[in-house]
Length: 343
Ligand SMILES: [Zn+2]
Ligand SMILES: [Zn+2]
Image (cartoon, rainbow, N blue to C red; front, side):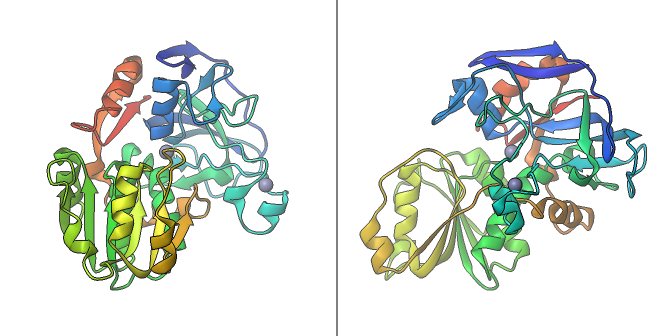
């Protein structure tokens, strides 16, 4: 079988990898769709991010779906032929945080396509994937591409859960890549009354309006576009910060009303923050990292038609054009989510 392997920055190869056997409680999956994520792009463009560096070749990918071709012993509730979304979250189930009910903080997490531990955790961009049945959410009624959106959607549902009650709230979303756009969908589904979206690309802002943003601001062409929202003591109850870039975070903090909640999803690196404003406005700064139970919740929301991710899938390229797909995925003037078709 073929797999998409990153060797170093800009050294992406489609290589043969041996088939794996299906163990008890596992399923074999013919991969159908794989979405390219910001972290995959960091490995491709920079060989890692922050202190995380590639130290050996690694199969990329963690946003995948496919059809079951074989069931291991003891698997119930899944059948050969089923389309499933496969969660890349693989906590150990037996560390202190897993016992505490915080599996996204598992001390032994084996999240697909991650160079944090060594040896690296190999990813899921492979034609044939063996996964635990517990990672699989049945995705009948969805396209393979929609099913492969379950992972980034889960990230945004987790942040929404951490944000608390959104009913009637005014929400600001900074950064309108896939995570920002899915945050708009998740916040609206959770009851947000008004959603303002910020980016520096007209293409992504047009997509933000399409998925439900009430107001969009291009801070590249309209640098003072957020000023009115900062009047008085600010406007927004909740911020989904999806850039991780100080130039976006700091003006956004100025628009938060007292006791507002800042959900930090963007992972751009460390930065200096206006601590006096955070303190005097009694703002809550909350990190949000990965997800666990939200994966199956997101698949259900899509299957019920309550969240529609289809507009976000802007291109699907075949496996033999993997490198072109990675280059396209990095182009925010024309791509939101670029996926690879494995079958
Ligand atoms: Zn992802
Ligand atoms: Zn654990």
